[in-house]
Length: 161
Image (cartoon, rainbow, N blue to C red):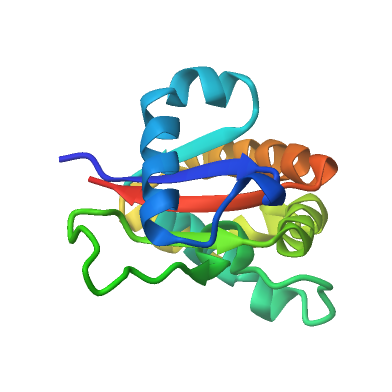
């Protein structure tokens, strides 16, 4: 079974802070994921996003003077609440405001992947995750968040099973 964390950059003025609307928006974006990823406005991680978050968590100890939180790229943003009468099959959603997108982009460009990997990489190796997989995720997230921040976009995140 595949499960994905899906990221979609969008102008803040084009979104509604409503779970039903955002779920429909993200569903359409998911259907067009390949094209949107190629355009740089979407990104997704299959299954391993928790491990990527764990990698970034090492920054908490390594960069005590960091100007942006390490948790923004994966779990950052505020949850968008389901309505009481909403569809229970709708995905969990998070919304990252443009200022938080900029913080995430800054973090991803200033953090040293090698230092993070040296701090926690042995743990991942024992779980079957490779350095190359994490480096690919890191580079992809750097590019995605960098483009979203440059455009002044918000980021909506959804979990798809």
